[in-house]
Image (tube, rainbow over all chains, first blue to last red; front, side, top):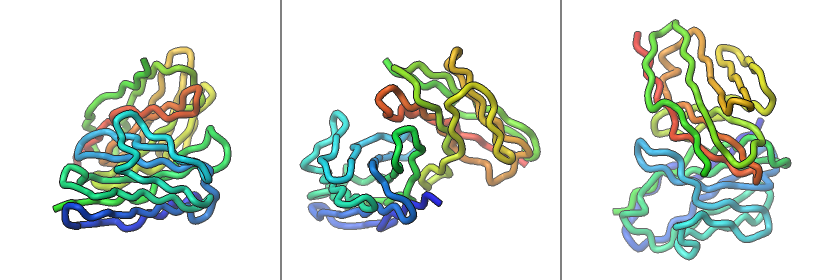
Length: 116
Length: 109
């Protein structure tokens, strides 16, 4: 149980393109979903927390207009990187947590984004 | 401030036992999680401790002492596939996860 699907796995695109990443909880309802970014050999960095039906809460230093998050249902959250530039190249990982705050986060497989 | 400390890197031999320590100072405590992350992959959930004591799950065990702000992950009968980073994360009073930087475990034959 507790499977999270993240799509796509890899994206390579030109600078200026907007990229949408989907995160789905397949066998449970995810009240809360999290978006992380991870640079090579570095720690996970939380970008934002989203609750179904409400606006995402962004961490300090993360541009909300750059990284658009939509958590439209209890099983789907999307992250759109708008007008991506080479410095946005990174490993983006989503996680989902079921009902109850003291629950583990279950991670998707991540999306490797490369902006040329 | 909130702080999670764990060793940066450890090396162990195939078939042996290794203990990865984690100490924490957080505003409140609602449990401690251990995750495994292989290079280039997303983390996978290993264990959750909220009460003091040892939780055993196959070859992996996790221990917690809340009074000492201390946990460890114990890996027995090490296999080459256990080479990975092991992340300690504490859930604070706001149910936010505070992540450690991870311990890279290298297994040698």
